Length: 136
Picture 1 (tube, rainbow, N blue to C red):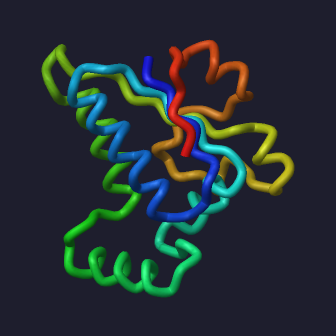
Picture 2 (tube, rainbow, N blue to C red; picture 1 turned 135 degrees about the vertical axis):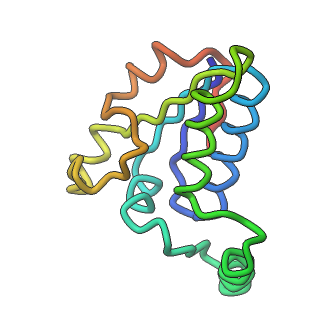
């Protein structure tokens, strides 16, 4: 199972992690994503495209408005739909939220998007993911 740890809260990095996940599912790989710290904070505000650079922020905002790139919710739905709708050659897609990060940042389960599959500890992620693990 392809494992992707998403730690960064920068919108573009999360988007690329979700693109990698969707591509792997389409290629028949099972994927588990683990969102921690600042990535979880971004999930509370998915429409905020802050990337730490004003120029990148503007490029992403414009591309979203023009439909050149899709919102994070769309990317999550794509991964889930690929795993559910495509034939048996597609892989599974799971999104985990780090329980420890949620506690430290004061994030409740109610604040997470519905496409988050579970709230778990890091050890549960590593029990599923096979090396090498992608870290974003």
